[in-house]
Image (cartoon, rainbow, N blue to C red):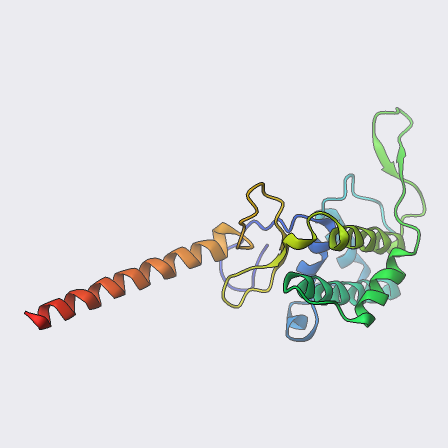
Length: 201
């Protein structure tokens, strides 16, 4: 991830569908919008965990569909993280996208490599993402969909670690900030206690 301020950091949301949420979001997250044109959605697919990257044919309308799906998923996943039911309208958007034909994997002529069957377009890409979201929100890790505990951080991830105690989008970013803040607070508390002791003497 490359935030507008601060150093780049590694962020693995744990699922293809949650990777889409790094491109922006609804409401106040609109300022982070990254999907403006077909090449933006294609670039996201290239960075995603889809391997190999499909050679996509994407229209402007499909980019708009991607933003609508992403925003619905953002709200639905955040609701799941807070133990709430997603809005009916967001469920409808997810279900309609998932109902379309997804990207279809096929064997390359050598029989050892995987490719994507044609046509590989924006609608099939979004169907693949939406189906991943349905599996995530109804699967064994649904209760581990979380929002980062960092202050002013809304990144959503699924905790697939064995202990299931992940709290941060990244230890490099929010986890480290928490450590630094906690250390500062401990030092200030100790300094205050020492001052109180000196006054008592």
